[in-house]
Image (cartoon, rainbow, N blue to C red; front, side, top):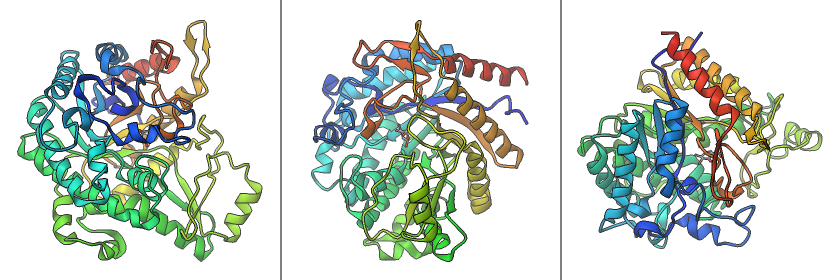
Length: 460
Ligand code: BGC
């Protein structure tokens, strides 16, 4: 089935990954500036200090979006540009920067989709405990009010927090991302405060008169490594932690399996805030996950027979699940399995689990890194074209199966700072000569996507 003619096509980026200009316009420091300073934290020793230099090249990026023919652009606002210390007085230059950026998009006929938190927490808030404290959630609500009041009239959709699960697991449980804390299960406090921040921001945005509020939750369909009870139980636990713990407080107003009971603080009252009704549900999808119990027969077999192409994630001792490489015919440059049908499965599963509580879905991120080579000024990224084509078809299949999916945003418009991987993974439709003048070169996938969008429009 083809995609509906009014399907929203877009691309996504995030402030720290593209902007650079980290000391420009009165921006304060963020936890990612700090984390990049830690020896060994970033694979290639780089940082987002210059990145794609989008702080100075916003108009060039808007021209690229226009040339691509997308309807929407999802970008994030750097909290330390708006409030350099995360609370109190507003930095007018920061607000003006995004105000102009939103105007430029609107003039080009591109709908701005705004993420308020894509991981660049002001360092001053981290010094007071960051997301492990309620205070950060409260400050986040105030920041949302400031930005909402200024941009409510022009922003098409608001996504308060990008991937609270990744912030919790990578940032606070495993220590692989900023702020680099390896707290294991204690990190669940950060999860709760990120969700509370989402709810407080949603309320503040609504009070500021914004039109549409959604999410950008990372989801993965989880499969057990075998039918053995221990693997099935480990997979169910992982599914709870990765998917349900972040969807259910928002959509149902409760934590799964009584998870909230062990948490400190007024969880019941918080859940009423967290479950403020939404207009849209954003899903970021990259691949499915296979999980077993540590030491189970299937896990041992996988560790001895599999080539282990996925980047190994160190899971601390005492954690009751083990990740097993997913079988797939193709892998991305990152080593991630390419499984488009996992996206259909995930979307149908969300619909089955949450029924009428699930608002219309937008795929707020989907994409892959590729091994790009520049040949006579061109980048023939056929692997990205295959990936996107198959994932757009997977979305069409989900729509066919009755799931209300309204749009798809490619991660990413530009090659950019890929967090702990630095610049070693390229996700862009457009190549950026990082550290070589930041020149932009549209890849073959850029022209291909423009064609696919035109086909959908022509089918109306
Ligand atoms: C994040 C992006 C990141 C992408 C690829 C998502 O988890 O939101 O910031 O670049 O995955 O790893």
